[in-house]
Amino acid sequence: MENSSPNKSSLHPFRIQTQDMAFDLLPGQNLLDALEQTGHDVSYQCRHGYCGSCRVALLSGRVDYAEPPLAFLHEGEILPCCCRVRSDLVLKCGKKKTSGGSNGQA
Image 1 (cartoon, helix red, strand yellow):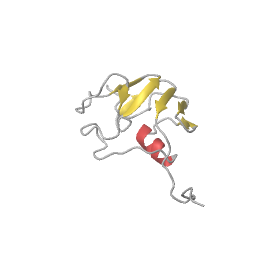
Image 2 (cartoon, rainbow, N blue to C red):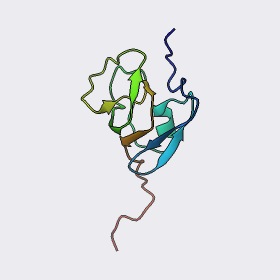
Image 3 (cartoon, rainbow, N blue to C red):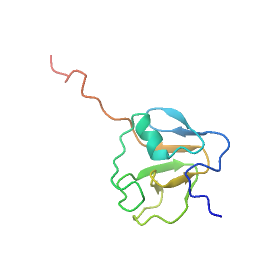
Image 4 (cartoon, rainbow, N blue to C red):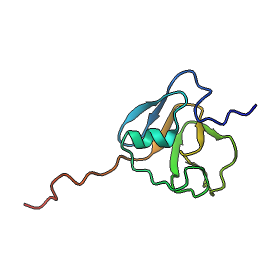
């Protein structure tokens, strides 16, 4: 029987490192949801691997997919909406920019 649930097979959290922070991906947690919850800037539309909008660069680590995504992926790219995390990851992904700061003018 195929396990299609993201990160379900892991009994321990995986460590996810991005450009701005590190966090634990809990068993059963979807990577795209976790990136959103931690304030990362990841676009998305379909959330099922069709459109490819959520693609991010995988710098290290391992993921797989229950079914190959329909969106085209270059080497080193993953779709956090539908991948299954299989190890700690390092991603090229930053947090959302906030507009609450000063604009640099005096």
